[in-house]
Length: 86
Image 1 (cartoon, rainbow, N blue to C red):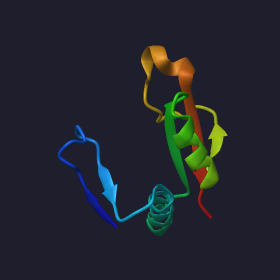
Image 2: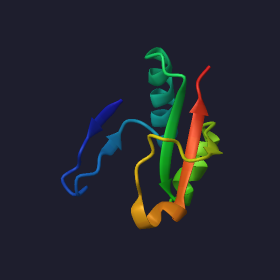
Image 3: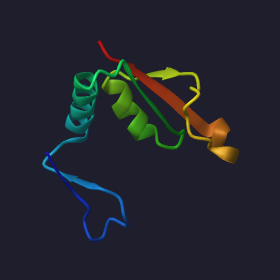
Image 4: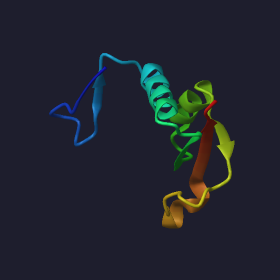
């Protein structure tokens, strides 16, 4: 997997040589190798395509967790997700 930031990406990473599903799979594998028991994420509701990708990888909706970012006024629009590692 090769990662680089394209010149026109405005600071976001452009992932080359890896599908989105492949990237998530790799992150899950690496987390397991590092001894993590779960992965947690949070994002706003308007990111529906990202949520579909996470759910397809096995993430499930969960309640807010103590380490979650404070989204201020957007808190009511935040979705929290969890992936339990074996």
